[in-house]
Image (cartoon, rainbow, N blue to C red; front, side):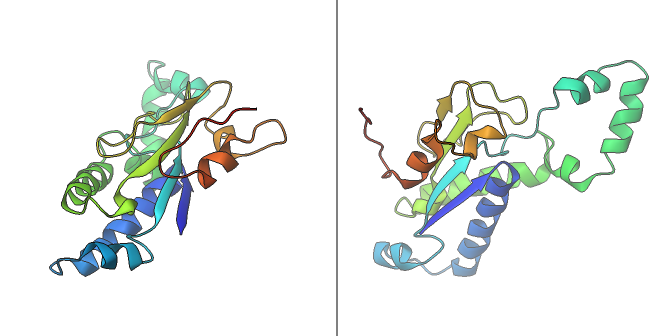
Length: 173
């Protein structure tokens, strides 16, 4: 099985994986048990996951940096659960990052703790960085946070990214 998520969806998937791991805590699983588990044995493909928090740029970022008005905008945003949870210093994100890295080290055979990540080269929505136990992230030029996961007849990378093996090979034409 391949689990695929975009942005906050990547955070939700990793949270679900950690819940599954918590259910199995205390049971030293053998490699074949991990691979057979539908969640821990799953491969992960994440498009611009928001593990390091959201970045407010564009008009929202400009408004936040405007004296006086920035305070009003931020006080309004702070009422949003998503804004609080996706802040770079969010306890939720910090916990998910720390527990995922710890579980990746504890269970080196569990694919679900090592995501392949694809980001736009200049993401203006989330901090574009993989976890230390993930393979090196890939970056796509001429894509945005929104378009990075949407294949078109001219942009097939999302389909290739999801379907390719754990260790990608060069695609030649």
